[in-house]
Amino acid sequence: MMLSLPVMGIKAKEATMLTDSLNYGNTTSNLTLSKPLEPTYLDNVREGGDWSSNWFVEAKGGASTFLGSPIGKGNIFDHTMPVLQVGVGKWLTPNTGLRLEFQGFALKNANLETMHYQSFHADFLWNITGRMDKTSLDVIPYVGVGLIRNSDWERHCKCKGSVRNSHPFAFSYGVQLRYPIGKRLHVLAEVSGISTLKNFDCVNTSEDFGDHMLNVTAGLSFTLGKSGWKKIVDAQPYIKQNAYLMEELASLRMKIANETKSRMETSQTDQREVLNEATTDTICLDVPVYFYFKRNTADLVNDTQLSNLEEIARLVKDTNFSICITGAADGDTGTSEINQRLSEARAKYIAEAFIRLGISKERITTNHLGGIYKFLPMEANRNTCVTVIR
Image (cartoon, rainbow, N blue to C red; front, top):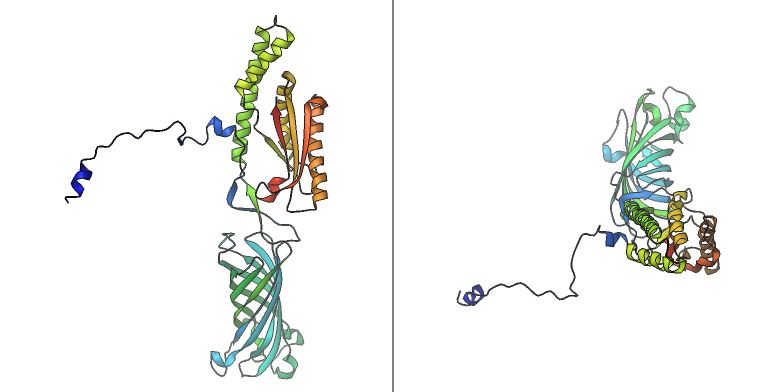
């Protein structure tokens, strides 16, 4: 208590802020909008893969219990046998996939007779967790249809029915747990079942559904082709920035028109200097505008990206400013020679668009960076950057 008394007597005073101290403000201010943006991505949204990506093969082993109608002799443990499951499939999206699986080994029927069987079924997979996290546990229920064949039908069957009953229609269903232990490798645990006709085990004469096999298995899954999903860039910051820049350009054109009208008696040289001063005071000229291209081409991802070219061209034609165009490719794909050609072709594409809008070649400078690693994801590096300079 005695030590706390001097502390209680301390008088607070306002801290002195130096001129170079940081001040936190509104990040959506015009100053922020006039700066180059780093890409941001939408949460839990991914682009669907092509047909060459996200294929998988899996192998599982475990125990299978025959649950027939009637169950017959013995208990559930007397009807338990080893089981093997092998499958191949593809994830169409992070949440949905298709799989073709083989299951087989042996079963003990109602009379505890050992029979061998093979089952082929196509399943629809649904990843209900949907977290799309490389370190998350996926919970994947599935349903499917197929055929199941009793190899020992003719030798054991004493029931009514034709040979077609040795390979009747069957339903498959289950829940799979999947956890990644590598970029392409997953460990699997699965509880599944198969339901088919009651006379499948050569005991019952009914052709209604009633024979089942309950499986508990574990194994591994390996991804083939390209693994993973592309992130989707959040376009809202760019839309907002482009709207701001377009307003600035429109305001600039109006200011230039007013200056031109008021300086009609001024010489052409003096007038141009006045216009340049007005432009410098109105807009930040080093703000780059990016145009994004499809992989391995000089084609824009979306032609609506060209909507800003006309306003930029008008600004340049009304002043003595120039345009700097820099082409690039993503360094993660292709060779250095291919990336160099791509960056040149992309810069040339934008330059020719400006020429068609009336900008002379002398006022356009082009650069070629080849493959770069500046942005993530790598798709964002397939761009051409346009900057207005004095």
